[in-house]
Amino acid sequence: AQTVTQSQPEMSVQEAETVTLSCTYDTSESDYYLFWYKQPPSRQMILVIRQEAYKQQNATENRFSVNFQKAAKSFSLKISDSQLGDAAMYFCAYRSDRYPTNTGNQFYFGTGTSLTVIP
Amino acid sequence: KAGVTQTPRYLIKTRGQQVTLSCSPISGHRSVSWYQQTPGQGLQFLFEYFSETQRNKGNFPGRFSGRQFSNSRSEMNVSTLELGDSALYLCASSLAGVPGNTIYFGEGSWLTVV
Image 1 (cartoon, rainbow over the protein chains, first blue to last red):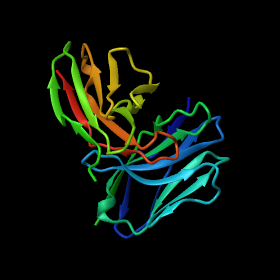
Image 2 (cartoon, chains in turn cyan, yellow):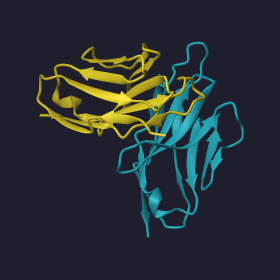
Image 3 (cartoon, each protein chain N blue to C red):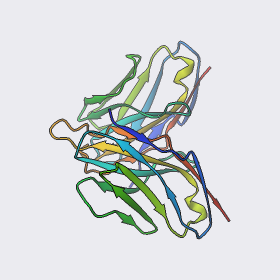
Image 4 (spheres, helix red, strand yellow):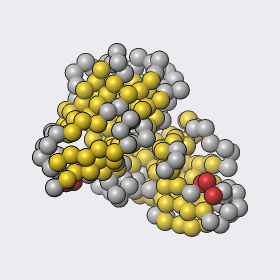
């Protein structure tokens, strides 16, 4: 089974600064998707960014970008110009894309990193 | 358009009772999946339904079951509740349930078992 590891239970960053959250995963598959989700106090999971494993180019979404190292099975999230609204729990997630037995919407989540933004 | 709606948002049950949670997906979405979130175990996949059929199931006992209706709304049921079933139950929906589709989560149903 796939496993996702987030080794930083808590992180903090000064407002306007940059922070990087780490994620590693273990899989024997070659085709998959990786995600970062944000879970604010409301508990609703919000998609931050997505990376297809077959793409070499790192995904970016405004202030959010990833460093995807497929060989190292590493998928870190960089948040630039941190804002108070970025404070939340961040989860790294894996989803298989193995055809024809791909597992639909079965995600494997890491244990999360709680991000605090200091004014 | 309306997001994923879960009801009830909060509930308290007694050990041994059963509970039913409901999830209304985003209009047009045919795939609904359920997750359990606890402080100790994190987020764990329960099952996924697509076009009224269970397509995949996580490693949970048979006390956990679900179904999906023709309008894509889904329910999950937990029978013979145990204290360890206390958790946030999250529902997620997507258009076709294929890996390329973005999935959207609801705000969850908080279940407390006493």
